[in-house]
Structures are given as structure tokens and as C-alpha cells.
Image (cartoon, rainbow, N blue to C red; front, side, top):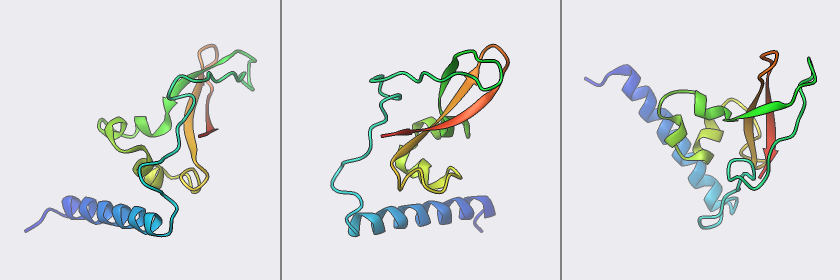
Length: 113
């Protein structure tokens, strides 16, 4: 007998793979091309101030890296399909967590890839 959580994970993974394959066939994804986040790759820095106290917000990385122990090692585009943000994959955006080291405010910003 298969464990229910394993069956659910396999079903969810299969759904995600099928969704990606469908997009490849539609021409959404060509070859190995994918968006490149300028923040994740160190090409740019986020410069945004806190709306509460005015201090500079600090980039704490991709939001999906905080989901569980293995999420930082998962394919980025796959995580975008499951991260709860409806259009980040479609609009080629990378959701980043920004935090204020002064007052503790946390904000999610979408970085265009």
C-alpha cells in the first residue's frame, strides 16, 4: 500500500511536469532558455526603503527558498508554479523577500528577469 502523502506528492509532481511539458509544446519555453534574475545572480542590488521606518530594506533571497529544507535546491521554474503567486512564472518574475533590519517589516517584491 502506498503512503497517502507519497501518492499526493507524486501526483503533484506529475501535474507540474505535465504543465511544463505543455508549455514547451506551446513554444513558451524554448530549449534551455529561462529567465535570469539580476538580483539572484548579483548583477544588481535591490534598493528599496521601508514604508514603515524609512530604513533601507535588505534582500533576504527568493521567497520559495524558505518553504522547506529542499526548496533552495529545486528547479526555480518548478517552484514558481507551486509558490502561490499566480503569475510570477508567466511574467518571468522572481519573488524576493525584503526585510527591514531596523523595525522588522517584511515585504515581497517581484524582480523582472
